[in-house]
Amino acid sequence: MVWNALVIVTVLLPLAGLAIDVPRYFALRSRLQIAADASAEAAARTVDIRHYINTGETRLEPGRYAGEAAWAFETAVADLRARGYTANLDGVDLNEAADTITTRASGTIRLFYNLSPPVTVRVSATSGYRMVRG
Image 1 (cartoon, rainbow, N blue to C red):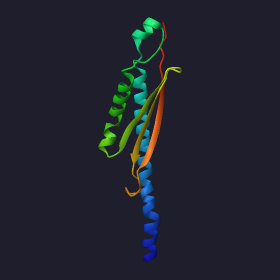
Image 2: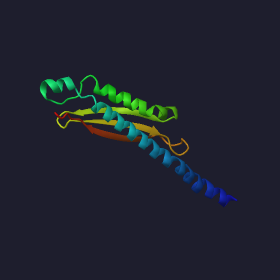
Image 3: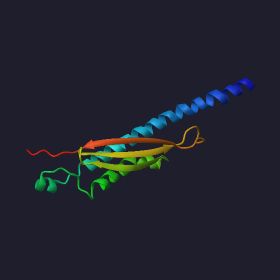
Image 4: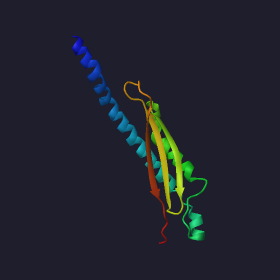
C-alpha cells in the first residue's frame, strides 16, 4: 500500500497536473495571440486619410491608433478575465519608417493546482499599413 501511495503522490499527481495545465497554457497563449493580432489590425486601420490626401504620406491618426488597439484587445480577452486569467496589453509600438505597428501582450496562469508562482505568457503581433493611389 505504501508503494502504491508513493507512486500516486510522486508520479501520477504531477502528471495529472500537467495533463490539465499544459492545454490551459496553450489555450491562453493562443487567445492572447488572437487578441494581439486583433489589436494590431485595429490600430493599422486608423490610417489618417486626410493627411494622405493632402501630403501623399501614410501615417496613422496620432490620437486614435492606441485607443483602437486597446479596445480590440479588451474585446478579445473579456471572457478570459471572466475565467480567472489575466491579460494585459503591454504596449503599442509604431514604426513610421517601416509603416508597421506592433502590439505586445502578456497574461498569467498558475500551474500545478495553483501551487506554483504565476507563469507569464508573452506574445506580440505586427501589422503593416499602406495607402495605394488608384
